[in-house]
Length: 208
Image (cartoon, rainbow, N blue to C red; front, top):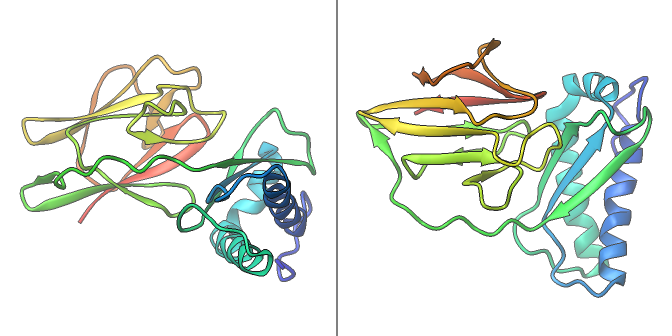
């Protein structure tokens, strides 16, 4: 697994083995079904080395989780989700795996403005459709969009649909919120295509 990727920091195969070992540990503890979402925390320097190959790495990691569950006859709570995030608390060459099974969001009619539908595209390629006109983003399970990343505050930022226009504001986060590399000090309007950084984690605001 991950044999095609050669990097100077943490080895991708180490990440894969740690995730599968976490699945085995959870199963041995009697958990069933197993969590379907696995977030791997790595040192920021290692993250920079992984970043150019992140998309194929995450694809292989998701496949490895699915294959391991099938081979070991583990049940997963839902379709596999995998992410790799930067974490200053992790030493170089090491990683920490956080397994979660987020509760499905309540169903709402999609928010459409002038015929457009809006999404947040997360670092692992996951697209979160904006289905409400007031959305909180952070680590807390009470947020509308939950991001399991220690760079992200419990309630980091807020998106609001006001008079047909989306705005974003920082909610007093520790590491700040930036839109197109500009740090937010007050609410900013979003038109679509913006790059939003929650601390070190970067997502995109898209409309289709």
